[in-house]
Image: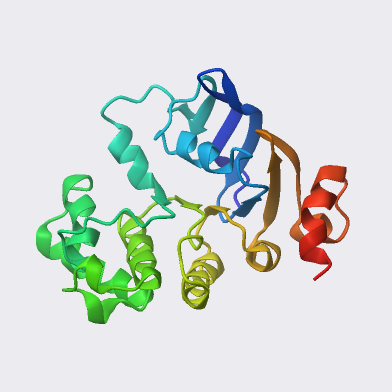
Length: 247
């Protein structure tokens, strides 16, 4: 596995008003990593992903993509977001566009593919996530699980090097969670580099190559999933995982 990091987060801090949400965060994402970020609500997990994707501007620190500091990107931000895609809790699809148009728009605008090329590629990707039969549907005609699979396809259509998932199943009815996790599992098996903020502990334990536990804006502990789940070193990690591990 290539050990040169794709993304490096160095001394990242983020403050909203007087409220520090992230404090001196350091971690790397290498090719093929599947990193699950777990922790209580309000611990800064989603803010961390939003900073990496430049949806929030870090207060201090740097984020390097392939060795280049991206924190001050101007108009190049769209090209960067093609490389570091994001899948949101609330899908963020364009409701007025069909499924296939949701998956071609970025390809045409950002990657400058022709409409034909973009549609052909979108169909391939939609077929991978089991959504090919719904190409002409509008998002409002889909279930939450189907919308999220389209959102994953839209991110994949830009050929990203990393996909960030921000609690991708938390807005779904429980019976729809599995179909989205299955798609993410398949992506992980195919070697997609992923960072996933999740409350799905079984997914974090079984699919991740590394688990990061955050609390109060700090990375308290990170490591191999099996070690972290069976023998966490940090008292706060033990407390957080206690409820899950005692089930």
